[in-house]
Length: 321
Image (cartoon, rainbow, N blue to C red):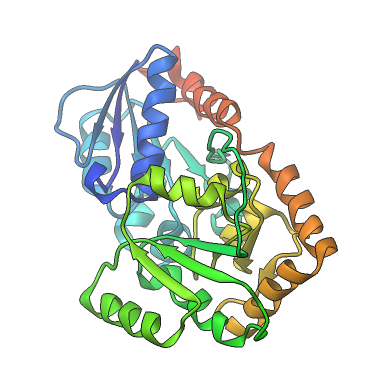
């Protein structure tokens, strides 16, 4: 099939949407499809459109649906889609209705959708290949993500102020500041919090190298659709401390012991210190992440994506119900 794969962010942004689009394009090409990855649909005919992000990709979604109303239109929802836009943005809401299939990236995503939308929804966990794990000293904690409000990016930095004095924990944050105000805050935090180190944007391979040496990863987001960085942490056998919000719970499971309340740096600090000092707690984190890792292997992601496409392969002229 000729597939138009729409992502609102190009390669230069190096964010989760881009990595997802690049990975899915590769999986689909390996299955024999022709894939064009674009930020905005160029109008060239396609047998199927797969669009990431309901609101940001709506111009492409609407144009494709108008020109080819019977051709399959698949929509993958991001965190800002699920936990904000589809509840308040008319374009995002219309995109849901136009889509023949909706893809969510973790098993709590369907909870945000009306029953008639959930009925046409499929779950595809993202993935990462195995990453050899060789933890170094001292006790290294990573935060990976651009500095923007949805990520609550300074929560781990604030938590370092509440660590025990004898703790060896060092926190390193990789990700660019998406505003001057964020950059200023990061510079100030780095000056005042000696355990927190902001490294800015670096090549993805550099991030993975540091992840392979880490003891923990922290994801403190206010909203997430299904974070790539969780997949990568699990691929590296690195436990995660995560804010207790739906997107993270959908990735790590209901009974995961590594959650802290959104915005609660004191509880995050307590969990960081516990992971450093209590082998049983660290082992419990590892046990659960290793179980969830089985959902997030590349072969699983590729298979689920190809299955969704296969629902339409023989019916490109008429989308199934």
